[in-house]
Image (cartoon, rainbow, N blue to C red):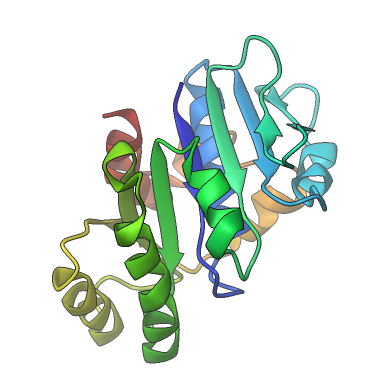
Length: 205
């Protein structure tokens, strides 16, 4: 079962946006999806509570004794939206179940260097060979110098940049209604769906 962990200890990089969109993609493909937060606050409940009954179903999550998500019976795909400051023992617990780790990263110097220790921690994990790691540039125009800086940074880490997610109201408007770009008419989000093609292929591989 794919377990996609969306993580970056740096706050404000777009983890919740990325998590909801991945869950929406899996649901649009007909999978039985669970979306949850890897801490006890369960902040994803807010978004799930806004999701209209007509939308493809995405299930909330349960906690086991360690506070890790327990997928409901019948779940085929899991997405975990993690809190800021994730590291150490808590990170190790989550990596035990991860098959994919998506690291959303805004291409600023401050965000890049704040994320470097986390990427080092992932690489040093005893389970590093059991999950794939990919980086997604958030709120970025891939034609800009900022995206070049991000690519230059990642080139030295031997990690793939899965794609770039542009800064657009499409995400904000969809999330406010409990939706994702995969729930609305494709013609309204054509450019965004194009940006997600490579990310989705990586998730499905």
